[in-house]
Amino acid sequence: MKRIILAVLLLVVCATPSFADTSIKAEVDKPILTTDETLIYKIVVTSTEKKLPQPQIPQLEGFKIISQASSSTASFLKSEIKSILVFAFILSPLEVGKFKIKPATIKIGDKVYSSQAFDIEVKQLPTGPGGEIPESTEPQINL
Image (cartoon, rainbow, N blue to C red):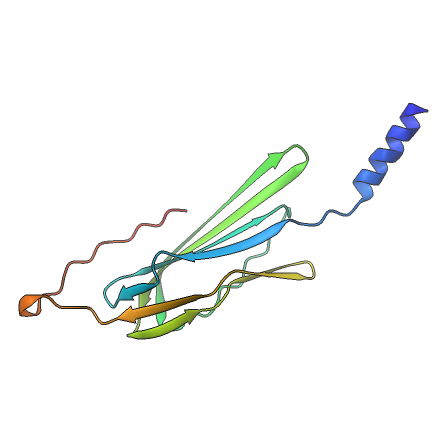
């Protein structure tokens, strides 16, 4: 009798649909930069879904992608999988002004998940005495 009850419980647990626990988060390394600086824009998708689609990257108006990288990891804990996708972009401003980076999105099943949006301001590069332009440093991406 215990075997029958255990078999029924196992069948019910296995037949119950699981709902993916998913989040998408975006971040920038700074909200204000000058024309000689770069902006790092990173998107992190975390989910219990086994197979994740690629997120939809927003149009990056006012910026040019000069480098990009991605990584993915999966970890297993008991009977649950946790997938993490990271996309990082180094952006170079095309002009001075205020720009909005719209949310990145990912669709899983019938649900669409969105990251936050960012307001970015690009200022003119300040010059030093005698019209000298300060040296810039190379950005590093930490995935």
